[in-house]
Length: 402
Image (cartoon, rainbow, N blue to C red; front, side, top):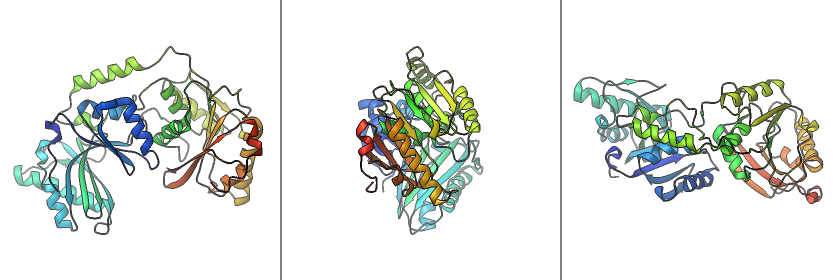
């Protein structure tokens, strides 16, 4: 494959924006709404999209896209079936364009190949090729820093086809910077943002997470409602350490983002409810750290006792109930049956969404979903099911065909 043109020397270049499985269309829509025609040649990929854009779009994508995990710049496509071919391919890049021996380096590998079966080993060989090039040319090699490197390199191999990219995000973009405390296995912020957008919540009506954990869904909903960029509280992105970083340009983008935040509008009711007092405290702490304490109401209450506010048009409930890993089958199925009964009798007028990885238990809800998506919560395959709770919902058929 031909080597890509040095991205730092051209006005427009390819940008790969990674996301979670099932959120590709959501991310593509975000890009269209945010960047319009500035994002050229938009193509939906597996767990990613590809666009052509400039440095401003690169910076803004990291700051503004709620369902993005990484923003990468491909710099080389290659083919390799052996360690030697991989090493040679990495050395085709003139790495002095991107870092010096005084800088630090980290390499991440993603591998799905019969020829290479360990991502860590691929990353190690790529790192060796880079530092060996510096050692050969100058006698001095850059150091490795896996925490906050000057340049983080991503190498992706599918069978014998590979791509080497610069990682402009560094830490994954779900690390928003507002979370100071969590429960065990908290909901990924990117997944939460995607769920909210898939739900169709109109940002003007009541929003409830009645099993809120550490408050991720209410916080993401409040940030969306107030037009606060998802990564507004991040301390740093990878591109800020690059040789071509334009600090004045970045400052202008931040000022534009500040001006776009809606501080004085009338906000809808956003509720985070959980049976655990520990979760209640964490929701309070995290919402306070995100400067959203006044927008979010937290409450300690079991779902079987929770009485929701009157449902104005578009009122939305999203819950992520336990999947039952530590519960007996009978207990988890009874729990889901209780959820269904509460929905039927107490949530008339609500748009209800449930994320669950327990496909058998979710049938016990006893309602037919009007919409359904496949998502992943970590490594767990889940169904994200939507229900319209009108008066006729109580007569709907079983969910067995979901």
